[in-house]
Amino acid sequence: MASHRKPKERTLTGSTARTAATLAIAGAASVTVFGEAGHAEPRLTTSEAKARVDRLYEEAEQATERYNGAKEKADTVQHRIEDLQNELARRTERLNRTRNGLGSIATAQYRTGGVDPAMQLALASSPDQYLERAGLLDRMSSRQAAALHALGAQKREVEQLRKEADSELTELRRSRAELARHKRTVQERLASAQRLLNGLTAGQRAAVLADEAHGTAGAGDRAGRAVSAGSRAALAPAVAPNARAARAVSFAYDSLGLPYVWGATGPSSYDCSGFTQAAWRAAGVELPRTTYTQINTGSRISRSELEPGDLVFFYSGISHVGLYIGNGMMIHAPRTGDVVKIAPVDQMPFAGAARPA
Image 1 (cartoon, rainbow, N blue to C red):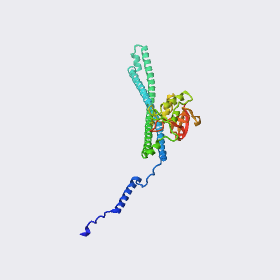
Image 2 (image 1 turned 45 degrees about the horizontal axis):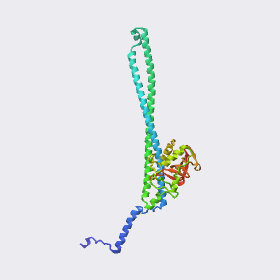
Image 3 (image 1 turned 90 degrees about the vertical axis):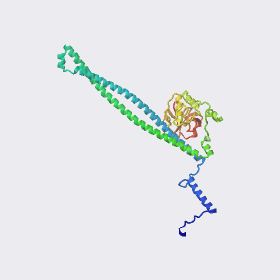
Image 4 (image 1 turned 120 degrees about the vertical axis):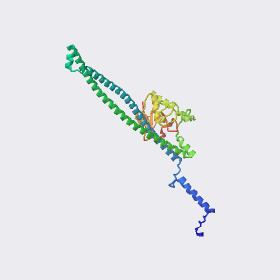
């Protein structure tokens, strides 16, 4: 009987128990901290975190400009479709009128021309009456031939318009798919940047989000923040080379403190190219929607030629733009979570400049 008894379980006591517990906790910690691979990503330094956040925001802005381009394209196609549909409705109505006219001619011909010409002559009260009827039939035949020719041409026009409308609808679907793709990219990059910031200490987060050493000047009164003496100097009215540039610069100053919102064109929020577009629109100049089209507006200029009102562009992909206000400073809409503000032109990698007017 003794040989079938269950062996007594050994309990761990003293140092043995403590050692086992320590090993178990360490094992659990290795899964929690290091993950399945058993390796933890080293904690980022403040400078490394800032570089990653800046890169994510730059990628978000690149995607934003592509989104803006796709939206502009989709809007243009939508307007073309509406014009085509209106024209198609007009042409179809005209086609129906031509068909109805042909029906009236056919009815009249049947009523007056259904009798053999010899019989018509015999039945006519006089040769003049016969000739009058014969002339009427000839005119009806001519009208019918003209109407049939018009009908054929109108049918071809309507069919061509329908093909164009179908083609534009296909293009609109492509543009909207592109729009959605770029929107997802923007949202993913912004979410990644926020997750990275959330993983930092409070001190690191403050350092990453702080203005760079050579600083940016905020709006002050509108943004609800104090304006330093240097900022006050930067906020002084700029001397623009002409009236239009002066109006664009004035609009930029009036917009200080408004929030950056990607894809926004005002009047209560802007992204970078939406802001510069609005500033120059206030001066009576219509700029294209995106950074990579705005840089080709007007005349290209060198950095040494900059004057207030000029557009300044940044990064190799021409993904950011600001409005130059003089003394090496610009006003721009920086990025999500920030506001329209004054900043040094040398804050970002300079890519070029353009003078709209």
